[in-house]
Image (tube, rainbow, N blue to C red; front, side):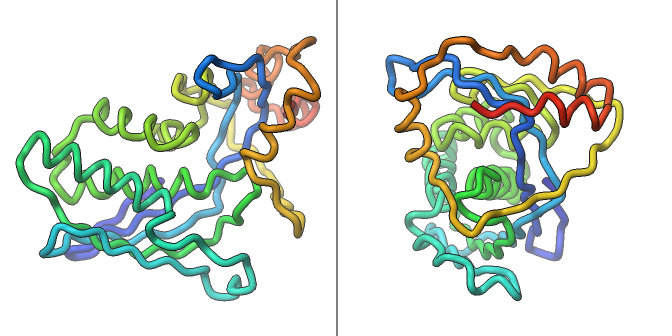
Length: 235
């Protein structure tokens, strides 16, 4: 995530992510699944531009970047995670400071939907960080993290802006380092898969014979592309 001041506006680049390792280890009593993941941000970005408005509303416009207009139709503003997380941000600010800030957001998307790249979650995290920065960092990181956890399982990861091992349903985030940057090629098939649809079929496969993330963590720490490639895992 990269943030740049442009007069009264903040421009934010929200990165996609890939899971070098993802294993479902069980199902929780709250309906979510227990996960063990190595998640890394990659250099494919959505762009958000934020500014404060004079009213107390959220004004969100969304579009695909130039050349990507043939992509599937984007959700309405009210269905977008950016709108949802900013509404929660407004609630917390109002509870603590008796003021409800209005926020204008322009979102231009390049990250494909239904591709496992975390675009919606990254956009939400970027909007949250930028909105807080517009208010001179009124809320602490812990307060932002609480909002992120309530918004979506991948959103907390994006607050850290770096590779991380993520556990639980995604709310346990432990940043990790690699020996070097790793090159990746992203290929998006024409047909996408929704996250709820994928997880709804897990009962057909069970959670036995788990792989274990340790070999991937070691390969990633060494910065060895061949080892990382050999230990890719998604189940």
